[in-house]
Length: 265
Image 1: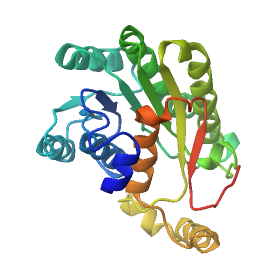
Image 2: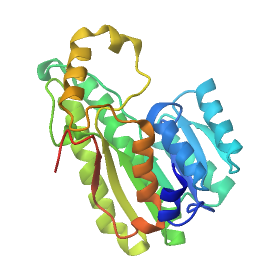
Image 3: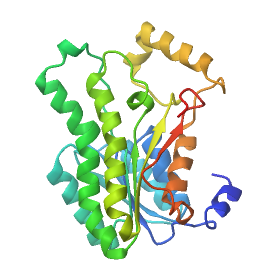
């Protein structure tokens, strides 16, 4: 994040004194968001569903930026685990002011191949997890009269792809969930928005690179973008930082697309 952009949203440490939870923050987009919020002065809870050296490394990076970091292992598809994570964060930091829901599983299945178990598994992680996190954090935010909720989603909720009915439903669902939260909790100084990344340059599962059909589809999408390149995780993080800042207090119930012009709404 450049100094000029940090200055434009309220100074070099616009989130000083705030505490954020970023789910799925051991790598890729989640890691970039956690570090960006830490650079802006926030204490950050780093989450993953199992303990890993990557998560601990992110927490250490956060502490190296002069703020507090905490590692929290929790399955965000489990409501009780999410509540326990938030309770620990409130106990340590006094409140949770920012909640970034950034966990998603990707499955490609023809509609009639999706079992009830498949459907429920994807909804639990890709949609219910956002509800669980918001529900656990909102009381703390209401008490302080300030809060920021951001869902990381995708353009599939607007421009669906085949063989992803469960994922598409979740992407559209988190947009609607953010709007419902924005409407109900706006009077408490709480905003809720969604960031929808397009194709982002991330560390991917090696199996993805072996899927030639998927790789060709990805390259075709890149070439069709107006900007002719993949997005960077830091660009998604910058969008989140803006939405979490004081300067975005009049922005709520919105979807901010970070997709290089692939999908325009």
